[in-house]
Amino acid sequence: MTEPCDLSATAARDLIGSGALSPVALLESCVRRMESVNGSVNAVVATCLERARAEAQAAEAAVRSGDALGPLHGLPVGIKDLNATEGLVTTYGSLPLADNVPDADEALVAGLRRAGAIVVGKTNTPEFGAGTNTTNKVYGPTRNPFDLERTSGGSSGGSAAALACGMLPLCQGGDTGGSLRNPATWCGVVGFRSTPGLVPRETRALNYTHFNVQGPMARNVRDVALMMAALARDDSRDPLAGPVDASGFAGLQGADLGRLRVAWSVDFGGSAPIDDGIRRHFTEVMQRIAPAFGACEARDPNFEHARDAFWTLRCVNYLANHTERYENHRDVLSPNIIANVEAGQAMSLADVSLAERQWRKIYLDFQAYFADIDLLIVPGNATPPFRIEDGIPREINGRKMENYMDASLIRSALTLTGHPVIAIPCGVDPLGMPFGFQVVAARRADRFLLEAAAALEDYLRGIPALTRPVPDLEALSS
Image 1 (cartoon, rainbow, N blue to C red):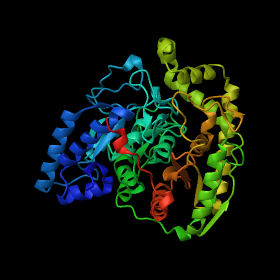
Image 2: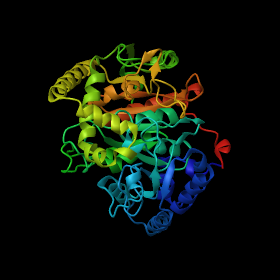
Image 3: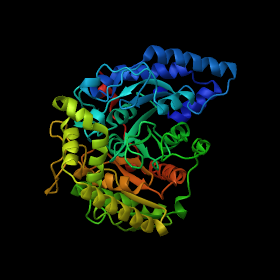
Image 4: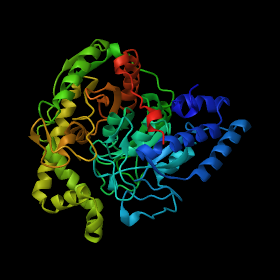
């Protein structure tokens, strides 16, 4: 018999709405799974179980009373430890904030609660989300459920690992250079980076930037869409936000793959370094699934200057967010934050101006690229998940990585476009670790992308070698 915690969020929500599943029973199933496997992977780093249990009881009573129920009614959710949660420690993975307990939810969290979600705890992250390896000096590393010696990815690695293990049906994360997509790929789950502004955030440090997009993570595409029904909204405090009808995300239907025009690229024409094993495997996967589409061809977008533009603009973002922190706490900050701030301090306005012009050209070229296609498919990551003790790859296929973001270009270049991107699982890689790819749609075509991804996910389920992998929970039990 399936444990309630292993149900999809959409299935669990339907059962809760009909009275066939108690929110209390679902929560307790999630707690038991956390107690069983979290000691091995270290994905959930703080909990508020007393409050969660009280809210689950209230959710159960609301069903019995016939009250109007929100789209996430009774569903447990994990919040990344970069987002403020009322009464629940929020450390940002940083020692100076190890005892920080916010007195209010930030708007995103409050919106999830209004939609009926039950916040269970916080998921691990690298310090202030800086890095593709989820580890910090407060809580230590989150390990990959498929190989405890390897990373879960980052920066939403705690959310991805928790989902893969069935600890929670839904988790929240954030994405600058791939922080939703990277851990989703390496843990075999789904991460959705929406068009910037669709999920607003009132704490944005810079007005107009494609960095730091907040979004949903789950074990399948329709669950991600269900969570978007609570996340997508307008908020005048975020200048990228605007009017939106979020109701269409719930109850998502799949698109007709046979009508879609698809392009695929292994490495953006050589702009993004890709491990040879991943290159061969991705190519084989694309050749295998190409018949599902109306048209499917290999064609590279132009990301010639994406590496330099992204690094410069990322440093501007880090100066805006972390200069004061760097000046006051440099001795305890992670090397990634120090490297970004110091690189930014060494840049000039001329460097920033050049990056802005490069960014503009990348954006315009990508709009032209999408003129006659519906989707672009690219690898989810450049390499398999690295061993935690080895750290971020210093080279790929003999090509030296000049900074710690270079191995992320297959994801970070897409950040610059502002297009919605979803990472979906697709079997395992040559090392037996979860494999997946990113699917990109036109700017603001978020619902269409989710419909297409849901249909593609359904198609992959019909190919045993390309279904979502599941970790050995018995081996993880502590």
